Image (cartoon, rainbow, N blue to C red; front, side, top):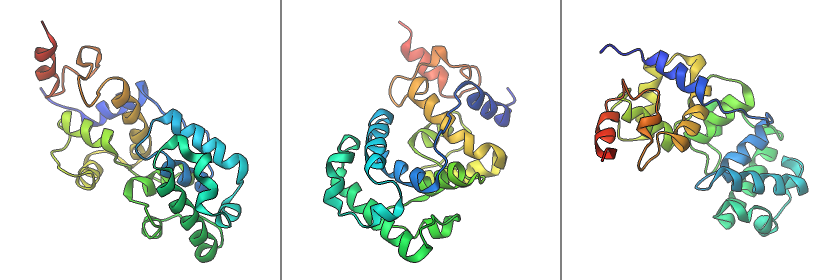
Length: 211
């Protein structure tokens, strides 16, 4: 069966869109840091609590890490994240005149900011074509047979060769939703998946799930 990977990507984006209300690059950056290893609802609570007290990068740059503990505790790893947030805020104020850099190279210089976080900021905060590869994107892309990679960085490189740039940004959010609801890490809902007729992994799971 011939595959149309671009059409498959369009379907995932269409059925599982992820909308971002926040557009401020700094808030997107901090929200993405808070989202590490936690659920969306915990990220939302921590982000709302943090920015209800500290309105911008300048105020956060003057805070102490311990001042943030109670505010962001719902996100988990709050001591590590608090230290990172304050450190990043100080650097942005000192080295970038209070503005989040709008290119990958400079974003990656910020402590604790990897390619996934940087690409989310570039797409959501600056509207640039950027492909953020998290565990969902990496897992689903390999399950679908779009790529055969071991690391997220490799997945990003390979996906960029087959997915047009205008789909890079929306594909990340859609795959997160798709991965949470259908293509789960364990016991994916293959019966409900609209790609189970083309996914090379689906039949394996379907046979396993049938009694």
